[in-house]
Length: 322
Image (cartoon, rainbow, N blue to C red; front, side, top):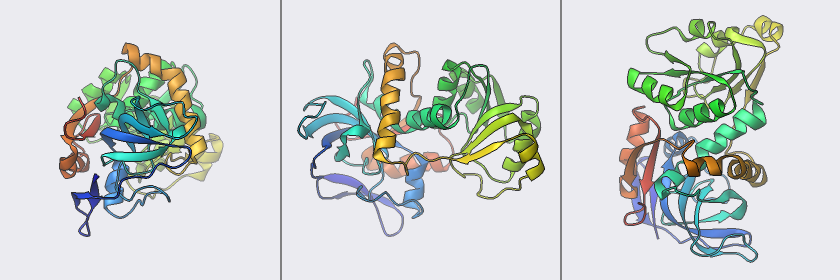
């Protein structure tokens, strides 16, 4: 089968690779579309290898059709599904542990379904399981116009929270407001820590971190929780331990990819239970920025490298995804 692999020069190209083998407890998916994530860029750069047992080519989420199942599967051949992956989504097929596979929501295209697993699972994990967001609390989400940011904003508003977010342009500000953000801060023209003091934070989901993280903690409410899920803005900061102790702040790290299949499956079942009907009726939706052919994966990656996307970038297998 064909897959998009990483070359010795950290380039992406399409090549023939061995087809996946169905194992007990797994299903085989004919991929129609795959989501592009920043972790894929890190993998191309040699900084984020896939977990053991997953293909070496990128791709953390996909949608498609069941091609084969193990015994006693809840799925059958021909079912439309989407899945969370440890890798291997940039291909024509993938073998996936069944607990990481979900039926596609009703009224959902393959393109939109491919944009759900990674960002909405990450959003659910950190808003509910790690962050314990409560109604009427104030959430701070960095990079509000990213695929993850727009998912987090939508879910936080459903949970009854006030949402504060950062963006880098007015166009991205409009996208964040359209998703429901209450306060939008332009990080290029405004002082983020000072603006946050106007809207004290109960829970933060931070994919940037970097030098300003320590300053931003000054804007936390007593008992606030700050979750670092990535360090796109840098991995070092200076924290005042007096502020940390005085406000009883919890500073936590959280990643989805490193969790066990059982832990990931628990989050995915929660997505099905809480969100599938809302995807079906249009109450919430993944925001799609651009769609590329799988053969143009390098161009898709460049959109994320340029921080030009407002929502998800999707790859489609030629002739399959609508």
